[in-house]
Amino acid sequence: MCREDGHNFGSCIGNQRYKFRKLFGPDAVSARENGNDSVWVPSQVLRDLSAAAFRDLSFYLHSSHLDALAEVLRDPASGCNERFVCSAFIKNAIVAGEELFPLCQDTGTATVFAWKGHRVRTEGGDEACIAGGIGDTYRGCNLRYSQLAPVSMFKEKNTDSNMPAQIDIYAADGDEYRFLFIAKGAGSSNKTVFSQETRALLFPDVLEDFLRRRIGALGADACPPYHIAVVIGGTSPERNLTTQKLATTGWLDGLPASGDERGRAFRDLCWEQKVLKMAAETGIGAQFGGRHMALDARVIRLPRHAGSCPVSVGVSCSAHRNIAGKITREGVFLEELDKNPSRLLDVLNEGRESEAGTRVDLNRPMDEILSQLKGLEPGALVVLNGPLVVARDLAHARIFEALRNGGDMPAYMKQHPVCYAGPAKTPRGKVIGSFGPTTSQRMDGYLAAFMEEGASLVSVGKGSRSETAGRACRQYGGFYLGTIGGAAALMAEQYITSCKIIDFEEFGMEAVHLIGVENFPAFVLCNEKGESFYSSLSEGEPKPS
Image 1 (cartoon, rainbow, N blue to C red):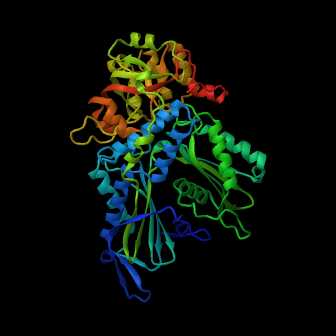
Image 2 (image 1 turned 90 degrees about the horizontal axis):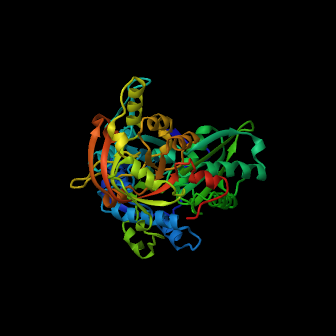
Image 3 (image 1 turned 60 degrees about the vertical axis):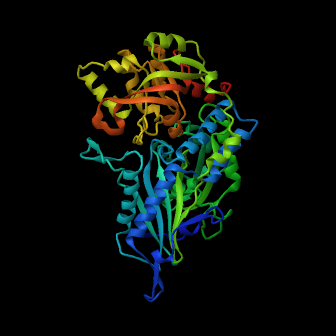
């Protein structure tokens, strides 16, 4: 447990935002005359609060986040592709609200920030109690186990529990124990960029050029629309990055809007608007073109050492999963998330129905599928029906290793398109667990070798791909399709009709599956000519959406 000097961010909660519900009354905690009228918190209370927090944030979102998605639908300047995506997000929230399918298949690294008042007393082992509650939820709900334990430098094994969690407990003044619980998926974590800059960055035109490049590089890999945070300064890299993570959740919205000579942290509201404008100008929009790459932005300025200027840019994705909690002498409280997303049904406007796209029958031979896709422009909507192979990092690595050792390419990789994904646990009575695409670039190193073997000629994932992948599509006549990232509950419930494991069962969620899909929406992101949708945006020629 460490003490925050100068910036006790536990006290920066934007109290106007948080509405709490009471989990337990004052009987669950008790004030003890221990010299300072302490608040006594039993271990079980910590465990129960943590379990409830991760259950709620896995299935529900903030009203403000859902309302911002609805505003994209209401905006007459929104493109039809981003209306389509944001409509899917609202429908996804409605499906997830039944508490069977979590909002996202990547149910995240469990992260907890806590600020323990000096008059709060516990039985000790707070971190273990909090972790125990998190583990209860991951075991008891249909969440995914994503954490890998390093057995050696190069060998890893899934922990089969989603543990360990990241838990940071800070000392604070007062008689309250405050918490921020976060589920952070790898896609959004991977978009955090940190660099040690110098005083030369701190000129308006230089900073604007720097941030424009950083915002453009965020791309669509982490499932926009985003909540963007930029942090400039910091007494250490650790301070900068911690501040950035808190800022993406809105936890620091209560910071003042100006600095002072003593080095207080502050939000720069003018630069927040500039960052939002930069995001809109990328043309990436809500994944497949448009102006709504970001729902909001936070720009925070911190004091710094004269010899360094830490800078970080990061996001919280469309699965914006965080929730506040607190323990006081009045009881145990958890933030109220929006458990009625159906209130937004009247604003749903898909922009274009999936039936408007090119319907592709995946039951046919691969050469017929490729023939139908030829000639489609990047950004075109297709609707997939039939079998898809589901394989991601571990399966690709194992197959690639076998090829290098003289083995054969599995027949299923040649017969069917491959979707890069790893589903969550399957709810009882359902076909599959929450299902969504993973970042496609991680498979780029395998693509050319696979295509040379007649495999992966049609791949489905999310985000942009490297020039290497584009060259492979051009050389072998392949296609890359992108589907909606961040709508995993909707995908599982509405678009997938069957599922079975066909290889590498020991890989858990990374096993190879064969699924059947019906009216599965995807967009052509790279065609057989190697033409990339996202490259056209960066060249200033966005495709119509």
